[in-house]
Figure 1 (cartoon, rainbow, N blue to C red):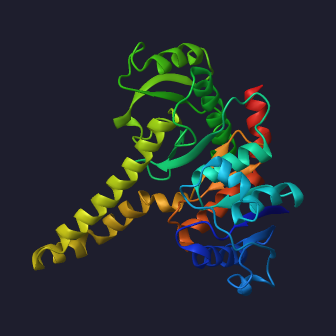
Figure 2: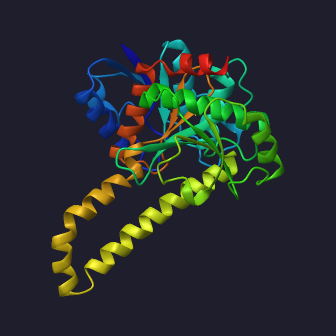
Figure 3: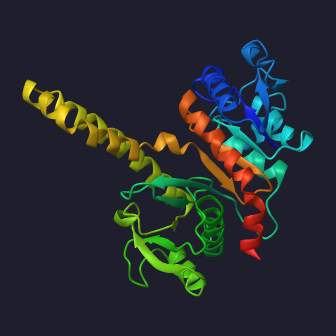
Length: 322
């Protein structure tokens, strides 16, 4: 039986989204126990289905690490601590990224040998059903060459566990594919990684989503910029396509013929179905959902935590790092 703790209060959409997600999750999954942390009045509809830990305090998005540690009554603080007290497998939150990442790292501790945890997320590619695993996508703003090498190994463990890929390849993001390209940090990381099993070298940003890469390693700053840039581009393209097909009567007729194809394109590039990002390198499964998560996207974040727990991902990572 999997056990997950859910911070019900932290996101932009509050408990409205998380209650919807938890109800859907419980309707579809029957081997998972949920501990929900939040306002008991807002979670009244869940009382017969979950264990509730009361909290009405939300950590502000701009909150510092020190402030987050002091707010011991907040939903995210109580949720992270409940992982220990309830012996849970993981925790999911849409609240302040800084607070969530700091609290999980400080309270739940890093895996032995991991210099710095990383946010890892799969992202759709142009190949139907193929996802590329990206990390770090925002847990830190700068990283050392050794940390980048560790990201590659943790990314491989993720691919093995989630996609049953026994030999995942790993690329290092760079401004050119040739050896010797990149920043001083990525050049040194290349030297550390070049003898690593599955390492294929540098990769330019334009090829990340073409489907050939299984794992792409970024420093946290670059990864976050790339991720949000792709999400913004996907949203803009969807809006532009909609405008193009509604601009005239003729274009509306054309859309009727192309509707099936564009629906498939939309589903393939819907990053919301990926859910949140997993903080890999910690002794549990923390999943950070989007701050503006809807009930649907928060549900997929819960599914990530559930599937990672079923795959025993923490042990997989420990083995891959030995």
